[in-house]
Image 1 (cartoon, rainbow, N blue to C red):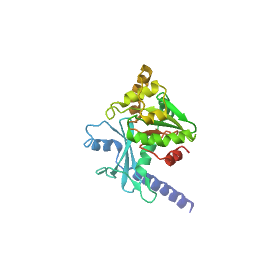
Image 2: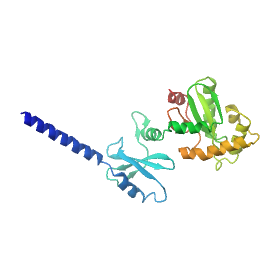
Image 3: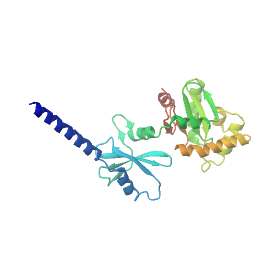
Image 4: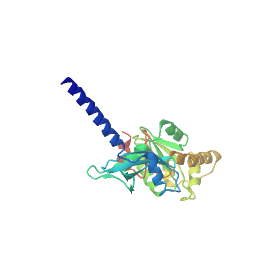
Length: 245
């Protein structure tokens, strides 16, 4: 009986090991998948960082590294079909794809430190949020008006980084430089302040324009939270406060 028990245990270990191997092979090999995807993205430089099970059975999650950030897509278990889109948990009302992408693209403490050098001004006190904005971006104006009362009430400290997108807003760079040169704050930014130009302001804005894309930040408005999470788009006051808890 003792020998039978030992044999049974040995077989069980072999079975579990085999299951683990099969589980690992349930998704395409990253190197092989990259060769397949090259036929679709021939002109893009990318790396297949990993391939693993997706939240939905039958799909595999593919993490791509491109343009300084990580993106997400899905394939079937054989790597033949590419599924482009988001996975939404209807019952929980959660965008699982967006949550995963946000988690994958968290900024490290070292990168958060880089952002400190780009701050044009700060307002408020409490949990700190970096806020990337363009002086002429209409969506940014909405976001700024939500942030201002929270900062005044001492619920958050907003560290503003001015990131003019010149291709869309030709005069935004001059406004950003003027705000820094004249030592203006959030209220002046909301009002569309225009003032003098100076070398120090120009250098900071140009450094911002050069640095943010390397950190994967290319859009405004964008928030960076204390834990390194980066979220673009306008967030409500409730969402902002929930993110810093």
